Amino acid sequence: ARAHHSPTPRPTTAMAATARTLAASVSLAARPVAAPRRAAARAPARSSSVVVKAEGATAEATDVYEVTLPKSVALQLKFARGNDGGAYCVFVPDETEFDAFEIGDKILAVSASFGNEVWDADSYGQVIYAIKNRNGDIYLKMMKMNGDISALEQSEKSSAMKAERAGGNYGAGTKEMQMQNYSKKKELEVQRLDMFDEAIALYNKKDFDNALIIFEEVAALEPKNFMSDNFQTATEVYKVTMYNIACCFSKLGQLDNSLQALKKCMGAGWTDYKKIRTDPSLAEVRTSPNFKAMIDKFDEPLFNENAIKFVKGIFGGGK
Image (tube, rainbow, N blue to C red; front, top):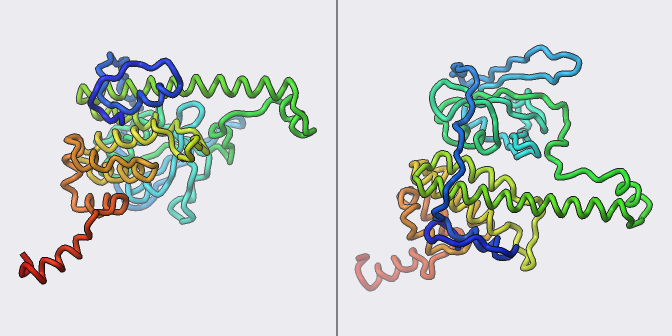
């Protein structure tokens, strides 16, 4: 499994390409990662109430609004990576605190991971990094998309393909679109693995913050409705990426975030529980009082501890 320890050569086949994602310490020269582009510095409101400000919109422009939420409230919103790499709202709780939001709305700016600066939302990974790592209130500058979710759709069928499908036919239009979609899918797979390698290189340099940003991008590129030949519902890339996200958070002392990543990792099908229990990169998160209960839900101990204590109580006086 590729977590982050042994160099692995770049494979030449699709199967090997998946396998190569299971190491996590590749000593490759990383492409430079630009620091998040910052918007004008501002101090997000520090109150428990929702702060909403709508900007005037032209006939062609879309409404822009600003919201400041306590982190615990903001985390109830769910975001996904759009086709343009941005962060889009995909779930809005049915509560008054979220009246300003609609599914499909795009994040334009977000409060920095610390301090009073505001970052332009240049990428999904950067946005999620900022939200997860911030301790205070979360400021979001949002673009109202009025229900338009086209940025979240994988690909549109050509008019020829739509006409053929409507008539129950399979012709040139359908075949051409399928070839285009296949080509795009393969390009995206290569891009995803390149991003993974870039994040690994940053991790090896102990640049855990920038590694996290890219790992979040890799996780967000997980194919929708994935199903492998052995009925796995998550790619190996996703499992290992979530593992490495857990390692990054553990190294940064963000234990709750690390636990959440481990839970997603194991929930996706990761079964190397021994590695989780022994990997030095997860040493910090293993100190969390919630770690044992969490991993035991996935990897039940061979001997129930309560039973062992009971037997010791009978034969060993509780010692």
